[in-house]
Length: 341
Image 1 (cartoon, rainbow, N blue to C red):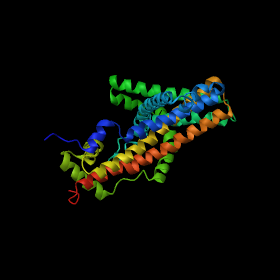
Image 2: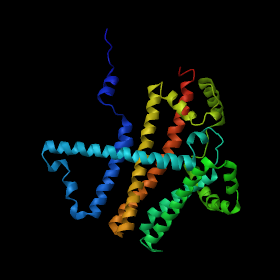
Image 3: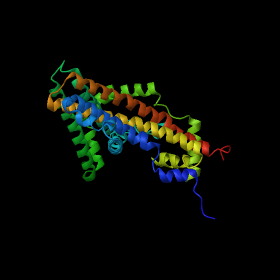
Image 4: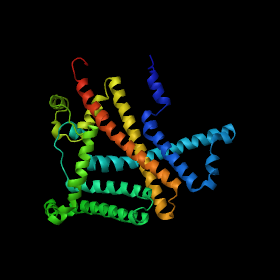
């Protein structure tokens, strides 16, 4: 008897996409595309006809379909580009560099602090946001271009220092690098982080409840099951705590898999929309800097982009920490319980 494909297999064959293609790429790409349209409208209002000419209703049906498909493809590609940037900016710089991955705090593991590493990323991120809001002040306290120049220069110094430090690690012993870092004049660089940024971040974490670990009984049960399932200690497994539990949690009950995928789609959407907003805000800031166009319309668009970047970033972090990450470990334990089996 020939093998029969299930309806789900047929669906997967004919539609090789899942919801993350929409939430993670298409919708954020659409947001970035709309930002670009709004920018071109404000910047080149007289030359906006090329945008309106793309609207399907202005052409014959077949031509409209062609343009519609072309725009969808462009938006999808833009979404992938935004997702690539957000993976570097959010996952590598902000999450890994500043907050730490959620599983470390959730499972009560001791975080390996790299104080200069964390401080550098905090300073860079704060300077970036200050540069974005500087044009909104419209030169009330100092020249907009002068302030942006100083902020970008400091960001460049931080980025160059991080690069040189990584190069030094390849050729210089770690003990010598630590000896330099322990000098008082170098440790002064940590003062703004220790007495200003760190307390603010701790207060925000308490407000969003992203500072709490899972219950001790839960962690003990998790470590026992992790050892039994994978033959290693959870505290020594590093990021494998996340990956192994993710694969285990999504390989069984379809309801559990659907729950994790839902949170994945939502936090991916929030992260990529925030990144698209940051990219647009940075582009508008560069436009104001080089063109000197600090008109009300440009500042309104910059305000919208910056506000969206902040709001969706907070939303992303809460979904990532409170719901997505916790769901993986809860489902991992649930899937090993006698009642579930």
